[in-house]
Length: 384
Image 1 (cartoon, rainbow, N blue to C red):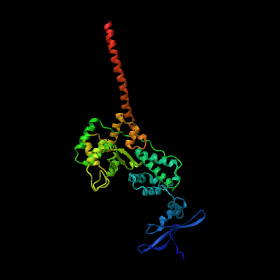
Image 2 (cartoon, rainbow, N blue to C red):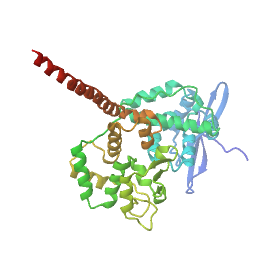
Image 3 (cartoon, rainbow, N blue to C red):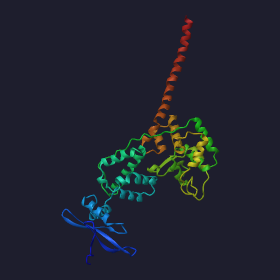
Image 4 (cartoon, rainbow, N blue to C red):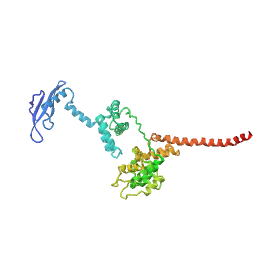
């Protein structure tokens, strides 16, 4: 096919051909000509209507390409082709998301990726990352975000890369991602008086579903998500166990069905059309209970910063630890903590209970000594 004639413009190196727009009207298609490294290059700059291209804009684009500020069309095409083949962090994230649709925090992860990871890391392959890349992002994010948010975002980056390595999609990084230090291990507890008021408020609330959710949190220490996911088939009344599926992303766990939890579940109304113990409005998975939970919290007069459901998990753990009758390994199993480090926050409560128990020995010996000294003291006075 013969080459269409080029028409010059008043801008050096900018020409156009007569084309036709999508709506059928005549349209100019602009091209730029220049030499780079001794080679004459002709590139399409854009269409008059479709790309809003003008001779002046084409001339500016020509200058930018000569100066190397904008890549050549050929270079851009090669880069786009390479990106389609390369397993960039963004491509790995989309693959990870597709393969893990049921991960509990996938929606939060998507927000973290889009807000904090996509721009600095999205178009890079893991092998091209260096510690300085991650350090800059961590330092920048810490200026406006909480350390826990930054840590969760960088942990997502690490998880995405590990996924790619595990699936043999890409090589990994050769350094450890430095995480910000987080000091937010908050342990919530209630006094005996507050606990009495809370139980009274739970008993008096008309919403049986949410009231029993709070009772289960207090009697078992289960997480909110674990209670919401609980199905009747997970409750083994005969053997006395509750099966917890996918506890915070870990392997399935089993905890005892204690007398308090058994009493709650045995009297709890069952929805014949739902498999869930505490179903949502449509009989499916419950998403939240914050409105009623906060109402009960207010009726009990609890502190504003007390998190009703997660706080009851802490109350459960604190009660067991402070009793001095439960060792930390057992407490870890009851709370389904992956690591003993999470359970360690309750160690001081157990230590205090053991200290009090140990002091009993001193008190007993003191009383024995006092009783032993009393007759001698009376005899000494008689001798005088």
